[in-house]
Length: 242
Image (tube, rainbow, N blue to C red; front, side, top):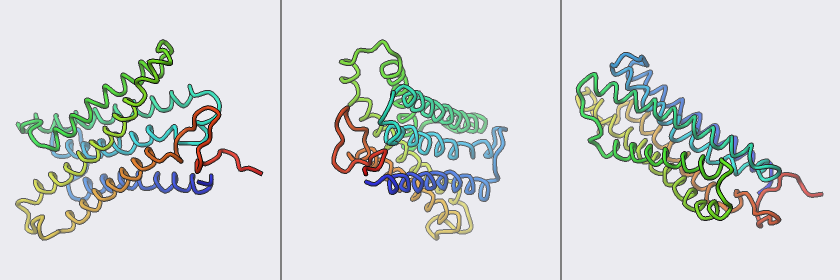
């Protein structure tokens, strides 16, 4: 893959991620009254925005740090710090998203963690916390041996993609659940596809497309950091050959 097309793909993926966030904000602002930290539905509205931003978009950005060709040369430590910092930021936003939904539920005496959506989400967040701790303690701190890092790297990679997959499933099921609740007593029910349903379904499709593209890039050999002294066929080079 040529360098130009590589960065064009990154730019397009970044734009798609921003669209996922903006669409979620617009949905909550236009159909559900905006945002406030007062325990009402306006507090809940932070939940989908923060989860899409943290668990999907920023999590994906952190996962793709090592796919940038600049990370393939020179010391790895700055890229490890960037990878860990972006994940930490994503985790903080995710926790705030959980606080928002728990605050709304508790203030309105709504049961917590009873739906499949909530089970998927809390599983993803729990695994995310474990994954960050493992990555920080084994791959960022200098105490771990190369043998231990080599042993745990496939586990770290597997759970990284698994967490993103769970997050996407949780977001999509959450959008669907929110529509069922908000449109069940509406003049135009969900089945008649009112404007909110069309917009929210479209937002869910954007999240799904974004997530699938990120998962593809994470699995594609041409986007991976080559081993020392090895450049796999089809991998983009940082500098053009003469």
